[in-house]
Amino acid sequence: MTGIRAVLFDLDGVIRHFHPEHVAAIERAHGLPPGTIEAVAFAAPLIDEVTTGRITRAEWVRAVGERIGDQHAAEAWGRQPFTPDAEVLALADELRAAGYTTAVLTNGTDGIPAEVASFGLHDRVDAVFSSHEIGFAKPDVRAFRHVLDALDLDGPEVFFTDDSERKLAGAEELGMRVHHFTGVDGLRAALRSSGIDLTDAGGSTYRARIDLLAEAVDGFEAVLRTGDHRAVVPSCPGWTLADLAGHLTDVHRWALGQLTGTEPDDPEAPEPADLADRFRAGADRLVAALRARPADAACSAIYPPDAAGTWARRQLHETTIHLWDAQQAVGGEPRLQADTAADGVREAVGDLYPRQVRLGRVDPLSQTVVFRFPDADGEAELVGTAGAGPAVRVTGRAEDLLLVLWGRRPLDTVAVTIDGDRSALDQALATKLVP
Image (cartoon, rainbow, N blue to C red; front, side, top):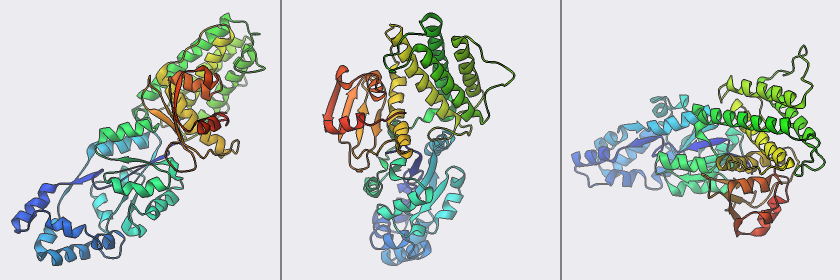
């Protein structure tokens, strides 16, 4: 029921790779049939004993040598080199820079600490967990529960990838998002579809969001300059355009304080008397403060990560939805850009709804609902507590889905396709998903 806060990687086959040609060369040199060594080494119960810490790596290699009848071949196999995957490590760097926790869970031996130290893995991820220390190996759910406890996270807050599909089972049981790793491009796509925006690490998405926020500020100011401040805002019952402008001005001031950690108002500088001027002054300070910081600059935020990038995203969507309200109030025909609206949907169900639950404002929903957009990349998932697959999938334009989630349009006024349990969708929409 929460957004992703951590990405958990398998080690062998994902972050580092052993090369089959090395094993084949050892077997040829020692006159062993192809596949002999690993057929013995990875057979139960021997593999279970070493990966749960009941025997050491040295004892494992020795046992392999005894069983294949060639200790020298086993020792050569035990010394085979590996290659770290530079692209996956770069991806881990991007995730950390974007504010996500990164960790590794491996079915490993007591040789893991030295092996990962040899290529500086601890400098690239936040934690490394090895089954030989945990006492349970993947896919045993207890191995995954150990990681969750150590990271102080819930299952739905973690994305896990492994090159063995069989080893995903324990993670799935705890509600983690899982991905069968076959390459870094597929992993990036899976992360993106789970709402993890990796481009923030390099700042391009962050800068783009600030630019879009600035454009939305321009649009809202234009409505204030030309529109009747007494106009009723239909999507905000009881409010006039002046009320809406006052609200958004206050939100920008509050967000600026969270971003900077200081009181944003200058007591020596009185606020402009004109409503549009007052709105513009506050918005400009917020935009300027965002532009002066990198995406990963630490600060208090409304949802994870606690970084400036969160405020660029949150205030873009806050200002955009209220620009829509304002334009509608003065008789305009507002439209939302598809990619921005799609990210707004992901924020609503993956970040704002979990916050509502954490604050005790709503009860958690049991069923998972997936929202898909034919006009934008990816999808959005509202994760239920039941832990099963999605109960219903809803497909429609990103703009329409965002406006439905924010209560701006009834579901029956937009074109959507509903596959699955309609009651699960109705229950979600009857819940106050957003503030």
